Amino acid sequence: MRHTDVLVVGAGPTGLFLAAELALSGVGVRVVERLEEPDPTIKAGSVNVASAEILDRRGLLPAAESVQRRLLASAGTFAREGAEREDGQLDGLERAYRRFPVVGHFAGMLFRDDLVDQGDPALAAHTAVANGVLVPQRDLEALLAEHCARLGVEIRRGVEVRGVRGTGADPAGGADDAGVVVETSEGDMTAAWLVAADGGRSVIRKQLGVAFDGTDPQMVGYQAIADFEDASGLKRGWTWTPRGVYSYGPVPGRILVARFAPQPADRNAPVTLEELQRVVREVTGTDVTLTGLRGRATRWSDNARQARTYRHGRVLLAGDAAHVHSPFSGQGLNLGLGDAVNLGWKLAATVQGRAPDGLLDTYESERRPVAAWVLNWTRAQVALLRGDEQTAQLRSLVRDELLTVPGAMNRVVALSSGIMQRYDVAEEPVPPVGSVAGDVELASGGRLADHAHDGRFVLVDRSPDGRFGAVVRPWEDRIACVSDPAADASLPSLLVRPDGVVVWVATEDAATVDADARTRLDAALRRWVGAREACPSAPGR
Image 1 (tube, rainbow, N blue to C red):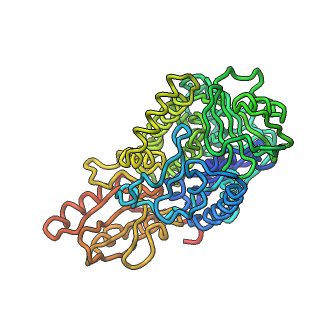
Image 2 (cartoon, rainbow, N blue to C red):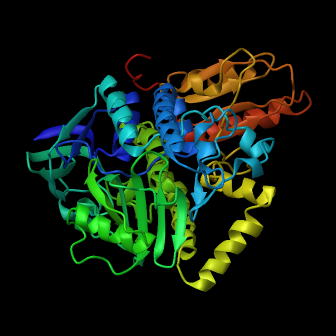
Image 3 (cartoon, rainbow, N blue to C red):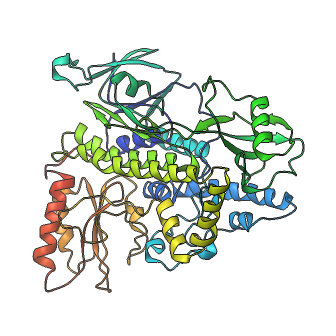
């Protein structure tokens, strides 16, 4: 049996990013994936700001920016081919996002950048990734696969998982001394820990009997990039009809269509050109003819469910294996990346025996409420998409009265961007403790994200005498200390976790900083970093 520290099942964005995080910490990791080749199905069209910042902290933002430039060029071609522009939707895609990236929609109502207050501190702190959010899921998976390859992560495709035993959830259940045993089409594999990132129909979650609570689907949706004989009858952007909703663009041939209808008898059957054309005609009311598909079309629903627990002994659930919902706003991709960056460093510390007590438990306590919120966020959007007259009136009220208020638009954009997440990380949290760091510029040049590429904690010490750097020196194998004395006393010193969450802050104040700030820093180190004993450094450190 082949053994590794952590076996990750699933080579989607969640599994790939998690594997890379483990490898950064020097943990042995292997990824197995059922599909022989990366999934060509068209899925999420972009990432949100929080996800782009995750990429930024690992040095992957330049690659994301390259993808966005290509996508904008394609969108520009599509716009120029159109005879008209509707509500400025395409104009927004042609612009370079020089400030906060206003991209996305709520129930098909696109965010308008002219209604967003760019001076809002909550938004202004997250501008560095503006040119790296338009990254479709297929491009992201390719980007992350290359990242894994550079880190030496083994990815085995065409390997089907058939069973799991020895999970350690029941000490009386005969757990194998070698760890979790995973039965696959290539024979048994063992690992100290197993992460199920194998999608919404997770074989592992089902076998373990983890309840998947939620609401049944009401909608059937399709998404594809297709060739049309004549698409002039289709409106560009989002359009509601009495029969459903559709979106055409922003790149040539991309069509999303959804209707409220029963689920097909065989949800796993491939989407045929004939099926897609029938649904497009029905929802759009246009006698359009599809002549071919570029890649594979996808069928989806608004099934919204969440695993009752994210951990079963030495098996952890992440990404769609832990939660599913409708794909509106592309929140599933972002939610999975958030799971991966939260879990990676915690699981690595656990594997290496240096985790503080209860550290791994915070994966579920922090991420499960975020997923529950996202499920409700997507349910609300589905409710606004119905084709009846009452819902149309409600949608008009939201679109024309609420989302035209600058403050309301700011709030919706910030929520959709993922930058409003807050975790309980300190007994006496002082803002921004518990939030994602965002863009932290350094007086010495560069940004905090530049020092987070190797997956360690980052301390930004802005004290004039380097007193906080001296405190964390015993943890230098796990903490990158950046000395950045600030002329402005209001700029705080920060301790930031590997997932970008601020766990300690101190503003320079000669009268109070020594006793209080050092006490809180020591508490943060004990709670999140662990004992002072050095641990093996990751390769390249």
